[in-house]
Image 1 (cartoon, chains in turn blue, yellow):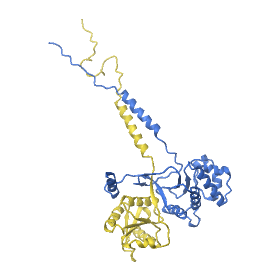
Image 2 (image 1 turned 90 degrees about the vertical axis):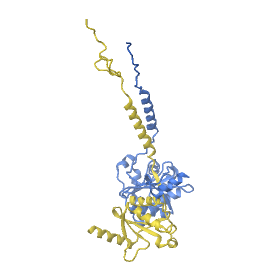
Image 3 (image 1 turned 180 degrees about the vertical axis):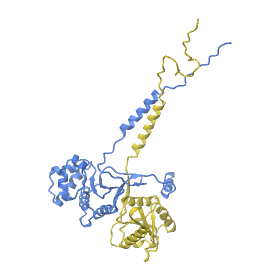
Image 4 (image 1 turned 120 degrees about the vertical axis):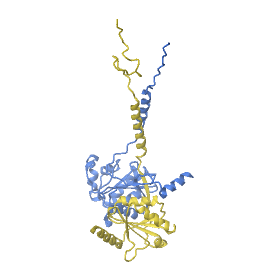
Length: 219
Length: 180
């Protein structure tokens, strides 16, 4: 009887190539992600269903943390506006700032978190010193002495002719009174429109907005 | 006399990895490695798109002393929400009655039902929500309520300061419920 040889075929596929492709894609994505500039202030923003993306240019950002401390900053690309702001504040409040101190505000990633009385000494500090320091924040709760109004006035004047994207980034636990102080400063400068930075949240199915979005996309 | 069996029993076993053979297989199965690679890829794909913070637009009404705008709104169509401490929300429909009988309490989950009920029962032109946060309300409460406005597609709403009468009512309600 002839021996029947069952032809054996290998069922193992060489996965090396697949692995190479996978890691190439991975490297691409790792390199392509832009890291956010490390937050010097720990702010946890509330979530909202808004899907409009926050602007990155021409931004005047008011941040307030959970203790209600208010910080004022301008986006880094607007060097001219930053220069105008610090000079306007210097002349109106007679702070006597030296060009070096004004330069430290014009640097990237700078923010103001002190009342005018401490501004001169604050601007003398280096970023390393500031990194660990706890700042008192700009006073806004006192209606008679809302210092943010001054900063906003300088900001509005410097952005004349350009659209200023006014943004508010608040911490979840901040009390309404700080937010109200910030809003009052805006109102005094006639800034009625502003955006609040939030974390994205999905729209719950079944709600009116969800249905509205469905009909909008269906058209 | 005896045959030296050098095949070492490799004939009846499937696959190259054979036991009791002097040469051991050097083949490594890379399938789990590929799975891991793709898992990491999908992780990075999802995290890069989600890192952009979104912005919520808020337009404040002009602070005019003229009560024209307030008069245009029919009092019966108004729903007033007051934000208190500990995520509690007090509300009343229409105008505040002198004895405060329509002053009710709710929390952030129930408020959507309240808003929708009121929205369904009133004329769309007259429906307006007035939001009054008190000093103990957190920023999160405020943003959540504004978010509810857009979730429930409320076209007219306003954020104003709380009045002393309402503050007193809130304090009284808090004391009454705190005592229980």
